[in-house]
Picture 1 (cartoon, rainbow, N blue to C red):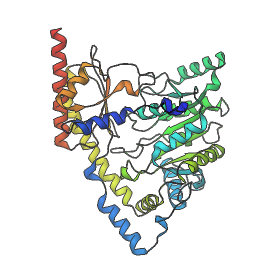
Picture 2 (cartoon, rainbow, N blue to C red; picture 1 turned 90 degrees about the vertical axis):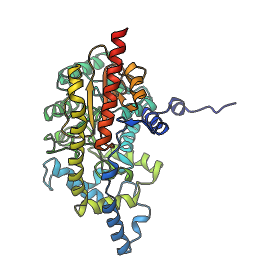
Picture 3 (tube, rainbow, N blue to C red; picture 1 turned 180 degrees about the horizontal axis):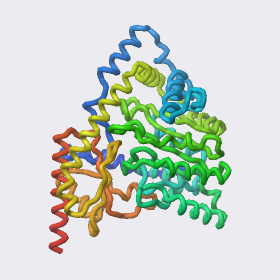
Picture 4 (cartoon, helix red, strand yellow; picture 1 turned 180 degrees about the vertical axis):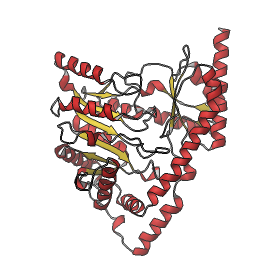
Length: 422
């Protein structure tokens, strides 16, 4: 006799990222260009130790106590000022601290948003490609992801999206669409950033639906630009005075120390935020108070931004190493990709005749050579088998990146020879 699981429990399966990580641990000889880990050597050990030492010297034990469910008031004040400044807003017209919630990473913020909006069978519209862990989360909740039409620049084709929405309205199915999800800055996986014009057009489109469809903006990589910030303001700024509810999510740990696991969201709809906080209170009583205090100090004392300057240079250098190691041979073979201006990924499109999915000859050849990548079909709502791959350069050092590139090139050569032989 076995347990009878709930519908939620029965839907669950091992995540693709967990499978990739397990494979990497089981094969220590593998060089992983798959998992989007940050650079271990650049993690701010000394800086974190100094903040902790200062807290200990002050003798304040409150950071070791439970905090509030919504998040540390000082940190929310800092976040309100920081995001307002990034969007070019004055303190008078900026975002309110009480609109923020602090979460266990930005993934929890996204999960709370979907949990409070969607029932099984509902629809969230996503870009093509999009963040594959978000797609896994939707499947786990029984929510259907539907790809939006995209233009040749990698932005949402807003005219075609309007036609898509009208089609749902004509069929009487529009009530199933609960949200649009945009990964708006140096996106995982593509490295693309959403233009100001596209954001405004999407907001206008949702505004015409009188607030019945929400906008989820995932800005996890907004601060991981290499040289200059992407100039488009957030969807929050674009939605000012409009009816479209916007939930903006980001992380404080990807750009600082990923093990601290502190993210946040800002919601333009206070009723929706209240419902998310009610669910959050049932889950965890509040995000780790100690890590929030540490991060508030790090931002307030300039430690956070000095570290950001360092890792921006580091990630740009790593991107250059991997790009240069691959470009000459792969470009000649018909592979295509653009050099990103921020983030942790290269998004490659293979030439005609080359498949890249888990069961492809290329993936098998890469494992044989001792290198891993993320197949692009994981980043498609419909999981269409295609010819794209995501390569992450965040965690490997320069020498290891060059070796990983050498192994990847060897795998592509082996596949080409087999194709010629057949």
